[in-house]
Image 1 (cartoon, rainbow, N blue to C red):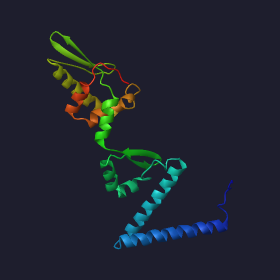
Image 2: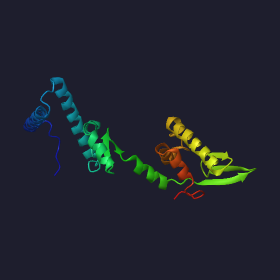
Image 3: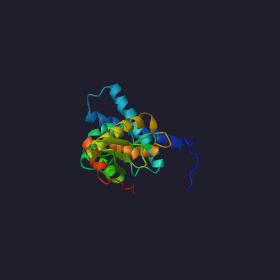
Image 4: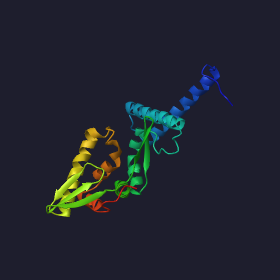
Length: 207
């Protein structure tokens, strides 16, 4: 069935106005039961938020995203923020839509573990004049020290500095944008965790 433009149909317009009025009355009634001390201004603010959620949900449905979005708007996620955090503590990923784009909230330790295994360090070691040289093949990082541990610690410092520069100005550069996963790993890891990662499979190529 193909429906044309019926915006000029007086009967349809009246039905839509009546449905909107009934919905608004129901929402106001629910709010008065939940929060009887709401002022008129606070009530208006809640109604605006509900309208934003409805519009966001409609956009998500049009974009075929409704099946993957837990919260169709920022307002919804803010209202249920404790539920969002409770869900992530149970290991669940929670999606939030805003202006047609979806973001995900998930446990940081699980995300770090994923990057730990997905991103290969590709560390190569060499000895020159009694010094240990550590470099990351295919990446612009090199360090040296009197021991292997010292050289790897230097790489950790270089990675920290690079992650800051990437966030500030390098992420849009063609030769740096593919390092997103590496930067997330650095940001989510402690120094000891980065040292463990660097020593994990030195010399191996990315999968």
